[in-house]
Length: 218
Image (cartoon, rainbow, N blue to C red; front, side, top):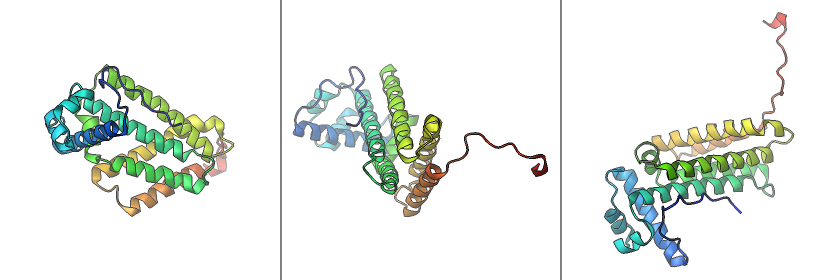
């Protein structure tokens, strides 16, 4: 089972129990992310979100007490989507080449979902203590998932797993986030280059101890 990030205290008034309720919440969160990307934090209102989602304001308030709670739920959903991709990419029953494409395609798909909202979440929307705690938990789970993925694709280098996982995570996240800012996530060239990047990094097994350079080579 994929790890999910627990909701911050007080973020939602109640959890949805039925498929219809979950669909309503998904529509509300999609609307919130869309408006956030178009109008920014200041332009986001609960009334606007309810109208865009086709839900009553009463239905929205059944789950979210304010717009900050909405944003926290959008952020947690993104965290959960990223973790789901990482766990799928670490599945040893899937061939190695397929695991790499699952990772790249999954990261592109996750960040293609309301890409403009990601910038606002990072740069504009306020973060309380609960938000920081959720982000810290995500960082821990993300690191664990990348370590699992790294070890699944690179055998015999377990002692390098932690550092290698962080390097891979930073390289991939940086490239995908920059592509999102540039509006290039749909580029087939980007996809091809990301697959090549991940494959080359996971395939390159450098010696753990660098050989000293001889005086003649200096």
